[in-house]
Image (cartoon, rainbow, N blue to C red; front, top):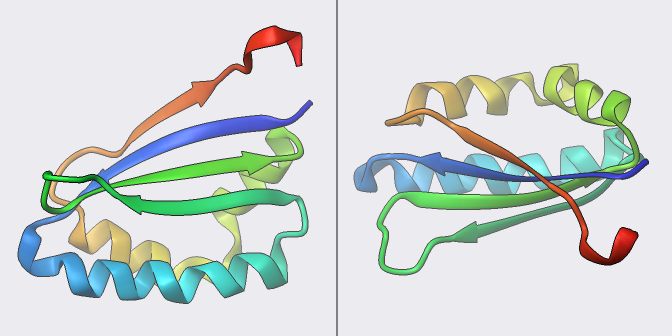
Length: 99
């Protein structure tokens, strides 16, 4: 069963460029090493400096677990951890209409 999550990450405004560079470096790595990652979309939240939302979809819980621990993305995870200025919020989304 497909798993969709919405992640909110917050960084200090002065760290936004470095954070976005790490996100931009992450995307091609995901496409190359995670065939079961169906969607990984990154957004800045309007009028909330340093707040980002990631919309992610995976083929299964196992695919998400692999994503979380993917050795190819270790450098980006370390950068994110260093730059985050607050807790990461992860919401699991359930589609309407029984899909």
